[in-house]
Image (cartoon, rainbow, N blue to C red):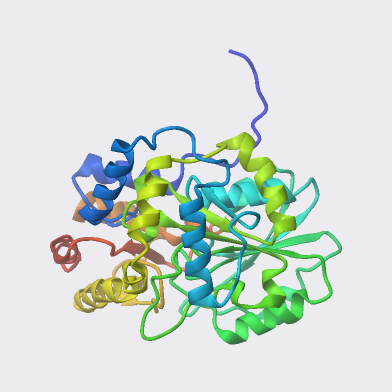
Length: 381
Protein backbone atom coordinates (compact mmCIF):
# COMPACT_ATOMS: atom_id res chain seq x y z
CA UNK A 1 0.00 0.00 0.00
CA UNK A 2 1.32 3.43 -0.93
CA UNK A 3 1.34 5.90 1.95
CA UNK A 4 -0.37 9.21 1.23
CA UNK A 5 -0.97 12.20 3.47
CA UNK A 6 -4.67 12.92 3.71
CA UNK A 7 -5.73 16.48 3.04
CA UNK A 8 -8.82 16.07 5.23
CA UNK A 9 -7.65 14.06 8.27
CA UNK A 10 -10.79 14.75 10.31
CA UNK A 11 -13.28 14.11 7.56
CA UNK A 12 -15.12 10.80 7.25
CA UNK A 13 -18.26 9.77 5.37
CA UNK A 14 -20.89 12.52 5.63
CA UNK A 15 -23.64 12.21 8.23
CA UNK A 16 -26.19 12.25 5.39
CA UNK A 17 -24.73 9.10 3.85
CA UNK A 18 -24.42 7.45 7.25
CA UNK A 19 -28.02 8.11 8.27
CA UNK A 20 -29.48 7.17 4.87
CA UNK A 21 -27.55 3.89 5.01
CA UNK A 22 -28.88 3.21 8.50
CA UNK A 23 -32.40 4.01 7.33
CA UNK A 24 -32.05 1.38 4.61
CA UNK A 25 -30.57 -1.20 6.99
CA UNK A 26 -33.35 -0.74 9.55
CA UNK A 27 -36.22 -0.24 7.13
CA UNK A 28 -36.71 3.24 8.57
CA UNK A 29 -38.54 6.20 7.10
CA UNK A 30 -35.79 8.48 5.83
CA UNK A 31 -36.38 12.04 7.02
CA UNK A 32 -32.62 12.61 7.23
CA UNK A 33 -31.24 13.39 3.79
CA UNK A 34 -32.79 16.39 2.04
CA UNK A 35 -34.58 14.97 -0.96
CA UNK A 36 -38.27 14.57 -1.87
CA UNK A 37 -39.92 11.15 -2.03
CA UNK A 38 -42.29 12.42 -4.75
CA UNK A 39 -41.62 12.94 -8.44
CA UNK A 40 -40.99 16.12 -10.34
CA UNK A 41 -43.59 17.42 -12.80
CA UNK A 42 -44.16 14.99 -15.73
CA UNK A 43 -44.27 18.02 -18.02
CA UNK A 44 -40.69 18.86 -17.05
CA UNK A 45 -39.61 15.30 -17.83
CA UNK A 46 -41.41 15.58 -21.18
CA UNK A 47 -39.49 18.76 -22.05
CA UNK A 48 -36.16 17.12 -21.20
CA UNK A 49 -37.11 14.02 -23.19
CA UNK A 50 -38.10 16.22 -26.11
CA UNK A 51 -34.69 17.93 -25.97
CA UNK A 52 -32.98 14.53 -26.09
CA UNK A 53 -35.10 13.42 -29.06
CA UNK A 54 -34.31 16.69 -30.81
CA UNK A 55 -30.59 15.93 -30.63
CA UNK A 56 -29.46 18.10 -27.71
CA UNK A 57 -27.14 15.40 -26.39
CA UNK A 58 -23.65 16.81 -26.90
CA UNK A 59 -21.63 19.25 -24.81
CA UNK A 60 -23.41 22.43 -23.85
CA UNK A 61 -21.44 25.68 -24.00
CA UNK A 62 -19.05 25.84 -21.04
CA UNK A 63 -21.04 28.48 -19.16
CA UNK A 64 -24.47 27.03 -20.02
CA UNK A 65 -27.00 27.19 -22.83
CA UNK A 66 -28.14 30.60 -23.98
CA UNK A 67 -31.78 29.64 -23.35
CA UNK A 68 -31.19 28.79 -19.70
CA UNK A 69 -28.87 31.69 -18.91
CA UNK A 70 -31.36 34.14 -20.42
CA UNK A 71 -34.18 32.61 -18.36
CA UNK A 72 -32.06 32.91 -15.18
CA UNK A 73 -31.28 36.56 -15.95
CA UNK A 74 -34.97 37.38 -16.51
CA UNK A 75 -36.02 35.51 -13.38
CA UNK A 76 -33.48 37.25 -11.17
CA UNK A 77 -34.32 40.70 -12.48
CA UNK A 78 -38.05 40.13 -12.02
CA UNK A 79 -37.67 38.83 -8.46
CA UNK A 80 -34.83 40.93 -7.09
CA UNK A 81 -34.37 43.84 -9.48
CA UNK A 82 -30.81 42.72 -10.16
CA UNK A 83 -29.51 42.71 -13.71
CA UNK A 84 -26.92 40.05 -14.59
CA UNK A 85 -25.42 39.74 -18.07
CA UNK A 86 -26.01 36.16 -19.28
CA UNK A 87 -22.83 36.27 -21.35
CA UNK A 88 -20.41 37.29 -18.59
CA UNK A 89 -22.14 36.98 -15.21
CA UNK A 90 -24.11 33.69 -15.16
CA UNK A 91 -22.74 30.15 -15.19
CA UNK A 92 -24.77 26.94 -15.07
CA UNK A 93 -23.21 24.37 -12.73
CA UNK A 94 -23.49 20.72 -11.77
CA UNK A 95 -25.53 21.55 -8.69
CA UNK A 96 -25.15 24.05 -5.88
CA UNK A 97 -22.31 22.24 -4.14
CA UNK A 98 -20.14 22.34 -7.25
CA UNK A 99 -20.85 26.05 -7.59
CA UNK A 100 -19.82 26.62 -3.97
CA UNK A 101 -16.59 24.66 -4.38
CA UNK A 102 -15.77 26.45 -7.64
CA UNK A 103 -16.29 29.91 -6.13
CA UNK A 104 -14.01 28.98 -3.23
CA UNK A 105 -11.37 27.42 -5.48
CA UNK A 106 -11.34 30.54 -7.65
CA UNK A 107 -10.71 32.94 -4.76
CA UNK A 108 -9.31 31.28 -1.63
CA UNK A 109 -5.54 30.93 -1.22
CA UNK A 110 -3.37 29.52 1.55
CA UNK A 111 -3.88 31.49 4.75
CA UNK A 112 -7.09 33.23 3.69
CA UNK A 113 -9.75 33.27 6.39
CA UNK A 114 -13.40 32.49 5.67
CA UNK A 115 -16.17 33.25 8.15
CA UNK A 116 -19.02 30.74 8.23
CA UNK A 117 -22.13 30.60 10.41
CA UNK A 118 -22.67 27.33 12.23
CA UNK A 119 -24.62 25.09 12.19
CA UNK A 120 -23.48 25.15 8.55
CA UNK A 121 -24.02 23.01 5.48
CA UNK A 122 -21.22 20.49 5.66
CA UNK A 123 -19.41 21.20 2.38
CA UNK A 124 -18.15 24.67 3.34
CA UNK A 125 -15.46 23.80 5.86
CA UNK A 126 -13.78 20.88 4.00
CA UNK A 127 -13.62 22.88 0.76
CA UNK A 128 -11.96 25.83 2.51
CA UNK A 129 -9.42 23.53 4.16
CA UNK A 130 -8.63 21.72 0.91
CA UNK A 131 -7.64 25.08 -0.56
CA UNK A 132 -5.39 25.97 2.37
CA UNK A 133 -7.83 28.47 3.81
CA UNK A 134 -8.73 28.87 7.47
CA UNK A 135 -12.29 28.40 8.70
CA UNK A 136 -13.50 31.03 11.18
CA UNK A 137 -16.80 29.62 12.50
CA UNK A 138 -19.35 31.81 14.25
CA UNK A 139 -21.64 29.63 16.33
CA UNK A 140 -25.39 30.30 16.43
CA UNK A 141 -27.64 28.87 19.12
CA UNK A 142 -31.24 27.68 19.29
CA UNK A 143 -34.04 28.47 19.36
CA UNK A 144 -33.73 31.38 16.90
CA UNK A 145 -30.10 31.11 15.70
CA UNK A 146 -29.85 34.90 15.54
CA UNK A 147 -26.60 36.54 14.38
CA UNK A 148 -24.84 39.00 16.70
CA UNK A 149 -23.09 41.12 14.08
CA UNK A 150 -21.03 42.99 16.67
CA UNK A 151 -19.50 39.67 17.65
CA UNK A 152 -19.02 38.69 14.00
CA UNK A 153 -16.92 41.84 13.55
CA UNK A 154 -14.50 40.48 16.15
CA UNK A 155 -13.66 37.60 13.80
CA UNK A 156 -12.38 40.03 11.17
CA UNK A 157 -8.64 40.21 10.60
CA UNK A 158 -6.25 41.37 7.90
CA UNK A 159 -6.59 37.87 6.40
CA UNK A 160 -10.40 37.79 6.18
CA UNK A 161 -11.17 37.00 2.56
CA UNK A 162 -14.79 35.84 2.51
CA UNK A 163 -18.05 35.45 4.42
CA UNK A 164 -20.35 32.55 3.52
CA UNK A 165 -24.07 33.12 3.97
CA UNK A 166 -26.88 30.59 3.69
CA UNK A 167 -30.47 31.81 3.60
CA UNK A 168 -32.80 30.05 4.05
CA UNK A 169 -30.34 28.13 6.15
CA UNK A 170 -29.72 24.41 6.19
CA UNK A 171 -30.25 23.00 8.81
CA UNK A 172 -32.10 25.60 10.89
CA UNK A 173 -34.57 27.14 8.44
CA UNK A 174 -33.44 30.63 9.53
CA UNK A 175 -33.76 33.42 6.97
CA UNK A 176 -31.82 36.66 6.62
CA UNK A 177 -33.80 39.74 7.67
CA UNK A 178 -33.35 43.33 6.58
CA UNK A 179 -31.34 44.20 9.70
CA UNK A 180 -28.95 41.33 8.91
CA UNK A 181 -28.42 42.69 5.42
CA UNK A 182 -27.81 46.24 6.63
CA UNK A 183 -25.33 45.05 9.26
CA UNK A 184 -23.53 43.03 6.60
CA UNK A 185 -23.34 46.06 4.33
CA UNK A 186 -21.83 48.12 7.15
CA UNK A 187 -19.30 45.45 8.07
CA UNK A 188 -18.03 44.91 4.55
CA UNK A 189 -18.03 48.55 3.41
CA UNK A 190 -14.58 49.75 2.34
CA UNK A 191 -13.14 46.23 2.61
CA UNK A 192 -12.02 43.66 0.05
CA UNK A 193 -14.10 40.93 1.68
CA UNK A 194 -16.01 38.69 -0.71
CA UNK A 195 -19.40 37.09 -0.05
CA UNK A 196 -20.52 33.62 -1.08
CA UNK A 197 -24.31 33.51 -0.71
CA UNK A 198 -25.81 30.02 -0.75
CA UNK A 199 -29.44 30.63 -1.75
CA UNK A 200 -30.46 27.18 -2.92
CA UNK A 201 -33.74 27.34 -0.94
CA UNK A 202 -34.57 30.86 -2.17
CA UNK A 203 -38.14 29.99 -3.20
CA UNK A 204 -38.99 28.02 -0.06
CA UNK A 205 -39.97 30.85 2.31
CA UNK A 206 -42.96 30.88 4.65
CA UNK A 207 -45.51 33.08 6.41
CA UNK A 208 -45.44 35.90 3.89
CA UNK A 209 -41.72 36.58 4.32
CA UNK A 210 -39.58 37.53 1.32
CA UNK A 211 -36.25 36.10 0.30
CA UNK A 212 -33.60 38.79 0.63
CA UNK A 213 -31.07 37.80 -1.99
CA UNK A 214 -27.75 39.62 -1.70
CA UNK A 215 -28.23 40.36 -5.40
CA UNK A 216 -30.94 42.88 -4.38
CA UNK A 217 -28.35 45.12 -2.76
CA UNK A 218 -25.78 46.89 -4.97
CA UNK A 219 -23.29 47.19 -2.11
CA UNK A 220 -23.29 43.41 -1.69
CA UNK A 221 -23.85 42.36 -5.30
CA UNK A 222 -20.51 43.85 -6.39
CA UNK A 223 -18.61 41.51 -4.04
CA UNK A 224 -20.78 38.39 -4.14
CA UNK A 225 -21.12 34.97 -5.68
CA UNK A 226 -24.79 33.90 -5.50
CA UNK A 227 -25.50 30.17 -5.73
CA UNK A 228 -28.87 28.61 -6.62
CA UNK A 229 -30.20 25.11 -7.27
CA UNK A 230 -32.61 23.71 -9.83
CA UNK A 231 -32.60 20.42 -7.92
CA UNK A 232 -34.28 22.06 -4.92
CA UNK A 233 -36.59 24.14 -7.11
CA UNK A 234 -37.80 21.27 -9.31
CA UNK A 235 -37.92 18.34 -6.84
CA UNK A 236 -35.09 16.75 -8.84
CA UNK A 237 -32.04 16.68 -6.57
CA UNK A 238 -30.54 13.80 -8.55
CA UNK A 239 -30.20 15.95 -11.63
CA UNK A 240 -27.45 18.00 -9.93
CA UNK A 241 -28.08 21.24 -11.78
CA UNK A 242 -27.65 24.74 -10.42
CA UNK A 243 -26.07 28.06 -11.25
CA UNK A 244 -23.90 30.89 -10.01
CA UNK A 245 -24.35 34.65 -10.42
CA UNK A 246 -21.47 37.09 -9.98
CA UNK A 247 -20.17 40.36 -11.38
CA UNK A 248 -18.01 39.86 -14.47
CA UNK A 249 -14.65 40.26 -12.71
CA UNK A 250 -15.53 37.46 -10.26
CA UNK A 251 -17.25 35.26 -12.83
CA UNK A 252 -14.15 35.41 -15.02
CA UNK A 253 -12.18 33.69 -12.23
CA UNK A 254 -15.06 31.32 -11.46
CA UNK A 255 -15.14 30.08 -15.05
CA UNK A 256 -11.39 29.50 -15.11
CA UNK A 257 -11.94 26.81 -12.48
CA UNK A 258 -15.32 25.60 -13.76
CA UNK A 259 -13.99 24.81 -17.25
CA UNK A 260 -11.34 22.46 -15.89
CA UNK A 261 -13.62 20.87 -13.30
CA UNK A 262 -16.85 19.85 -15.06
CA UNK A 263 -16.45 22.05 -18.18
CA UNK A 264 -20.19 22.03 -18.88
CA UNK A 265 -23.30 20.31 -17.55
CA UNK A 266 -26.23 18.24 -18.80
CA UNK A 267 -27.43 19.68 -22.11
CA UNK A 268 -30.99 18.29 -22.53
CA UNK A 269 -31.86 19.17 -18.92
CA UNK A 270 -30.76 22.76 -19.51
CA UNK A 271 -32.97 22.98 -22.60
CA UNK A 272 -35.92 21.38 -20.82
CA UNK A 273 -35.61 23.49 -17.67
CA UNK A 274 -35.42 26.73 -19.65
CA UNK A 275 -38.68 25.87 -21.39
CA UNK A 276 -40.38 24.65 -18.21
CA UNK A 277 -39.50 27.72 -16.15
CA UNK A 278 -40.84 30.13 -18.76
CA UNK A 279 -43.97 29.85 -16.58
CA UNK A 280 -42.95 31.79 -13.46
CA UNK A 281 -45.61 30.24 -11.22
CA UNK A 282 -43.56 27.05 -11.27
CA UNK A 283 -41.11 28.67 -8.86
CA UNK A 284 -43.08 31.54 -7.33
CA UNK A 285 -45.66 29.11 -5.90
CA UNK A 286 -43.07 26.77 -4.41
CA UNK A 287 -43.23 28.41 -0.98
CA UNK A 288 -46.97 27.80 -0.69
CA UNK A 289 -46.51 24.19 -1.78
CA UNK A 290 -43.96 23.49 0.93
CA UNK A 291 -45.73 25.58 3.57
CA UNK A 292 -48.61 23.11 3.43
CA UNK A 293 -46.13 20.34 4.18
CA UNK A 294 -44.41 22.34 6.89
CA UNK A 295 -47.68 23.21 8.61
CA UNK A 296 -48.87 19.60 8.42
CA UNK A 297 -45.59 18.26 9.78
CA UNK A 298 -45.49 20.80 12.63
CA UNK A 299 -49.10 20.01 13.54
CA UNK A 300 -48.32 16.30 13.63
CA UNK A 301 -45.13 16.79 15.64
CA UNK A 302 -46.98 18.94 18.19
CA UNK A 303 -48.60 15.69 19.34
CA UNK A 304 -45.17 14.26 20.23
CA UNK A 305 -42.76 15.08 23.05
CA UNK A 306 -40.48 17.04 20.74
CA UNK A 307 -40.24 20.82 21.03
CA UNK A 308 -40.51 22.57 17.67
CA UNK A 309 -37.96 25.23 16.74
CA UNK A 310 -38.84 28.02 14.27
CA UNK A 311 -38.82 27.18 10.56
CA UNK A 312 -39.01 30.24 8.31
CA UNK A 313 -37.64 28.63 5.17
CA UNK A 314 -36.08 25.51 3.57
CA UNK A 315 -37.73 22.11 3.92
CA UNK A 316 -36.15 21.19 7.25
CA UNK A 317 -37.72 21.21 10.70
CA UNK A 318 -35.49 21.20 13.78
CA UNK A 319 -36.65 19.93 17.17
CA UNK A 320 -35.26 19.57 20.67
CA UNK A 321 -35.94 16.50 22.78
CA UNK A 322 -35.30 17.39 26.46
CA UNK A 323 -38.57 15.73 27.49
CA UNK A 324 -37.70 12.53 25.65
CA UNK A 325 -34.19 11.53 26.70
CA UNK A 326 -30.91 12.76 28.14
CA UNK A 327 -28.76 11.60 25.24
CA UNK A 328 -26.33 13.23 22.84
CA UNK A 329 -27.95 14.16 19.56
CA UNK A 330 -25.92 11.45 17.80
CA UNK A 331 -27.17 8.81 20.21
CA UNK A 332 -30.72 10.13 19.97
CA UNK A 333 -30.63 9.95 16.18
CA UNK A 334 -29.34 6.37 16.37
CA UNK A 335 -32.08 5.46 18.83
CA UNK A 336 -34.77 6.87 16.56
CA UNK A 337 -33.60 4.98 13.50
CA UNK A 338 -32.90 1.70 15.28
CA UNK A 339 -35.82 1.52 17.71
CA UNK A 340 -38.53 3.66 16.11
CA UNK A 341 -37.76 3.44 12.41
CA UNK A 342 -37.31 7.15 11.63
CA UNK A 343 -34.04 8.65 10.38
CA UNK A 344 -33.04 12.21 11.27
CA UNK A 345 -29.82 14.23 11.34
CA UNK A 346 -28.08 15.26 14.60
CA UNK A 347 -27.44 18.99 14.26
CA UNK A 348 -24.07 18.76 16.06
CA UNK A 349 -22.78 17.40 12.73
CA UNK A 350 -23.14 20.93 11.34
CA UNK A 351 -20.70 22.43 13.90
CA UNK A 352 -16.91 22.29 13.61
CA UNK A 353 -16.68 21.49 17.33
CA UNK A 354 -19.69 19.15 17.23
CA UNK A 355 -21.55 21.50 19.56
CA UNK A 356 -24.54 19.59 20.89
CA UNK A 357 -27.70 21.56 21.71
CA UNK A 358 -29.79 18.35 21.67
CA UNK A 359 -31.34 19.28 18.34
CA UNK A 360 -32.37 16.97 15.49
CA UNK A 361 -33.22 17.91 11.91
CA UNK A 362 -36.07 16.30 9.95
CA UNK A 363 -36.74 16.77 6.22
CA UNK A 364 -40.43 17.29 5.42
CA UNK A 365 -40.10 17.30 1.62
CA UNK A 366 -42.12 14.10 1.63
CA UNK A 367 -45.55 12.80 0.70
CA UNK A 368 -48.28 13.38 3.28
CA UNK A 369 -48.54 9.66 4.00
CA UNK A 370 -44.78 9.49 4.62
CA UNK A 371 -44.94 12.30 7.16
CA UNK A 372 -47.99 10.82 8.86
CA UNK A 373 -46.41 7.39 9.11
CA UNK A 374 -43.15 8.82 10.47
CA UNK A 375 -44.84 10.88 13.18
CA UNK A 376 -47.05 7.95 14.11
CA UNK A 377 -43.85 6.13 15.00
CA UNK A 378 -42.42 9.14 16.83
CA UNK A 379 -45.51 9.45 19.05
CA UNK A 380 -44.47 6.13 20.62
CA UNK A 381 -41.46 7.79 22.26
